[in-house]
Image 1 (tube, helix red, strand yellow):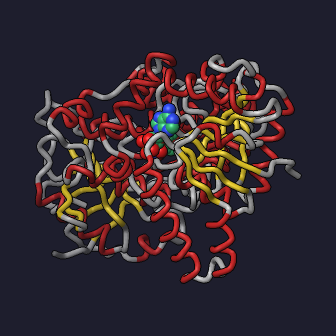
Image 2: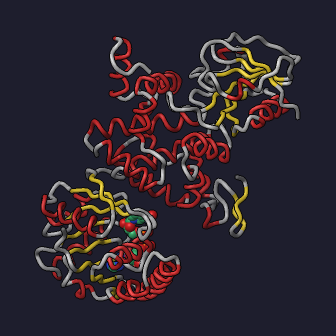
Length: 217
Length: 292
Ligand SMILES: NC(=O)c1ccc[n+]([C@@H]2O[C@H](COP(=O)([O-])OP(=O)(O)OC[C@H]3O[C@@H](n4cnc5c(N)ncnc54)[C@H](O)[C@@H]3O)[C@@H](O)[C@H]2O)c1
């Protein structure tokens, strides 16, 4: 399958920041078009696939939705990235109910051709990773406030006891508590369950960002 | 510095007890391996010899150190043999009544200075200590599976635990070459309090049709660098065990994330228990793994 793609740039892309080799791999004429964050998506049925980079929003925000009949050659995507850490090699590809298999295959070919790992998920807030990891960060931040353990001991427990490369507190701090606030609030808006409610420390960080103090992520 | 010389391990014929006994003997402590089941003790002894043998082959242990460690271990079905222990670590069945009864009997046997540590994963240290006339001598010491390989021990005081008891458990942990972390006496301490709801959320994501089990695992490993995905891990631990963990935590915490997801219960009802039954979120054929 062909893996040529053209890029429509908007503002800064979280998936492909300046200098990322994926940007250099684009060509003018291609079967697949990739809209980076900030670029305005336009339907184009002549393409094998149209990819729209997502932040915390659903793909439906860009395409519109039609009582479960939405979907065609458009897919959302996001390369997982913890705050301003370098992006991971994992791309979540977002499909809708009627997304075609051929569009998924074309999108895969482009992304895997660029050396990225692709997983497919439905159009839900938080996709896979944030849906699972944000409640854990909220829980760890609450445990910290409740005095269950120190931040260092929680992180050490996850590294030594579970073999994780880092623990929840060091990771969420590194990614930016205000950024965590934004991501988990988007999940909370849809699911409304306490697990997604931003933890107090995240609310504090977002408030400080709003005042122009401290954590600016 | 620890003043502990002799360590008793209750349930030493079991998975955790056998590993804890290895940790103790390897670090130079005389170790009394107690279990109600003599055949389990025999199996554990054979496994221990095999484990130390491999350690020697891999150059992690000298042959002399192996022989000395094995010589420090004695096996018994007689509780009275724990009379000389400075520290008794219990890893018997995860049942409050069984643990409380064991502590009450130990009280009759052990000297006043003996520290009692519980390896419970889900029960309250304070409640376990209620079975003992010396609740100030009871402390939580939660080892990780496999205990003979994992360094971490969550050390938790119950409400009645004395600072001396906590300090003794901490010092022994360090002397045994392990890494202690301090946690409070709350369901799941740190590790399981973070892990059990996270694993349930992964099951719920599959149930909600967000992604396949294989893609959920790939996403978590690829994005976060975990060695195992949550659904692979549940298959390894056993889906029935995950239900039991949920049933221990949810009634206490009332945290919806700790409640067993309906899909998990349906899979257990269907006999899909994970690796041990050949099928869970993945299908296993002998040693090969499909569906990933
Ligand atoms: N398996 C794990 O992953 C894990 C991890 C950390 C902690 N734990 C905890 O460790 C403890 C043991 O778990 P396990 O998986 O090793 O269980 P297991 O069933 O493998 O072993 C339990 C052993 O205790 C013995 N036993 C039971 N009651 C006894 C009694 N009254 N007196 C003497 N011996 C008795 C049994 O004969 C058996 O050999 C539990 O409290 C469990 O929650 C387990």
